[in-house]
Length: 496
Length: 65
Image (cartoon, rainbow over all chains, first blue to last red):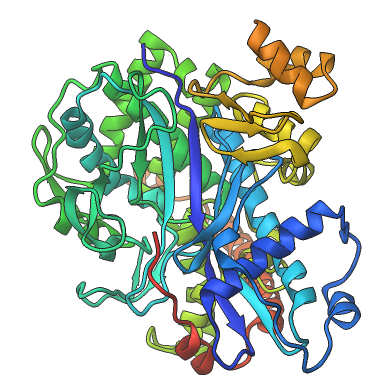
C-alpha cells in the first residue's frame, strides 16, 4: 500500500521594483515578506482599505526605501506555510496537505498573501515606487524560476523505478499543466506559442541541479521527515498555475501515478525515447498532435500516453482504492476531470478555455490578435502573456477573466481567505500553525520537521515532527484544548 | 427510385424554413459571442500596462530555484 501522498507546492514569484533607479530583486522580495510579517505581527488589518489610500497615508514623496536585513527574511506563517527570499525571488511554500484540493486552496491562498504583501510594501516605499509580483516561470529572455511540487514517497521504492515511469509522465502531463508562453527560449526552436513556460529549460533526464542544466527528474533528497521511511520527491518540471482546475489536476494525477509506481502497478514499459527532445516537442505543439516514441506503445501522441496512464489509474482505483491520494471522493473527482480534459484535448483543445491556463491564455491572445490584427511578435501579446500572471487583483488578467465568469472555479473564496491564516487540519502543519498562532513569541524556530519552543527556562525545547501525518487536528486538537502555555504543551507531550 | 427520393427529401418549403431558423439563431449567438469578447477585451484594455514595448523590455528576472 502506497504511503499517503502528502503534498506541497513551492512557488517562486517573478518580482519587479517599479520606479526605482537601481531595482534590487532581493531587496524587493525582502520588503514583501517583512511588510507582510510586520503587518500580521501588529494585527494590521487593512482588508477594507484601498491601495490608493494606503499609499497616501503611509508613503511620502522623496522618502527613502527602508533598510532591509535580507538575511533574516524567512518567515513561517500561521497557516503552516513558509514564506522567504530564495535567490532573487519571493517564495511561498504551501503547508503540507493531504489531498490535491487542499493544496490548491493553499496555493491560491499564497497568491492572496503575495497581494497583501504588495500592499504592505507600498506603505514602506516612496509613492513613486511599487513592488509587483507575477506568478509565472520565465521572463521571456532566458531566465526561469520554478514552481516545484513535493510528494511524500516510500523510501523503499527504488529511485530508478521512479525515474523510468516519471519521465514519460512529466513529458506528457504538460498538455494540462502548462501555463502557456509566447515564443521560445534557451536555444529552443522558434515557435509562436507553446503550452508550457518551462519545457525550454530542461536539458537533462535526471540530476540534482535546479538552476542550470535542469533535469526532468530532480534527485534532491531532503525528506523533511523520517529518512528511513520516506523520500520527498521534488518535482521541478511544472509550471505555476492560476487556474484551480489545472493545479488540482496537476497534483491529483501525479499523486495517483506515484501511488501506482509505489505499488508496482504500472505493468508496461512506458519509457519515452529522447525525453529532452520530446518534452519540447510536446510543449511546442498547441494542437497536441506531436508524437513521442513509447517503448510499449510505439509512436503516439502525449494524449494517447495519458489515456494509458488513466486506464491504469482507473484499474488501480478499482483494485486498491485512492485513499493514498486523499479520500475516495477527491480521487474520483481527479479521475473524472482527467478523463474529461483528455477527451476535450483530443477533440478541441480550445474548449478548455477557463480550465487550463495555456488554453485560457491562448484564447485571450487569439482574440487580441484578431481584433487588433497583431502578429505573434508584437510586444502587446508578450505583455498580455506576462500580465495574465500579475498578482495584483486589479491588474491580473486572469482575475479579470474570473470577474467575467470565464474561469471555472473549484474553490470557495471564503475558504481561500481562511487558508491565509489557518493551517490545514490534515497534517503536522496543523501543529506548526497552531503553535505559531497561539504562542508566536515562544516559537524560537520552526521548520518542516521540528519546532523549537522557549518555555521560559533553559534549555529550549525541540519538538521533532518526523511523521508528516502526525500533528493533524485529529491528533492534537484535544491536546491544544487542554493547555494554555507552551510549557504545558511540552509537559504534556513529554509525559505521553 | 422516385419513391425513395421523395422520402429522403422533405418538401422544399418546409426545408427552407428550417434553414432560415438555424442561420438566424447561429448569427444571434455569434453576435452575442462577439459582443462578449469585445466587452472582455475592452475591460482588459483598461487594466493593461500602457507601453507594451517598454514593459517587455524592462521585465527581466534573475534565474531562480
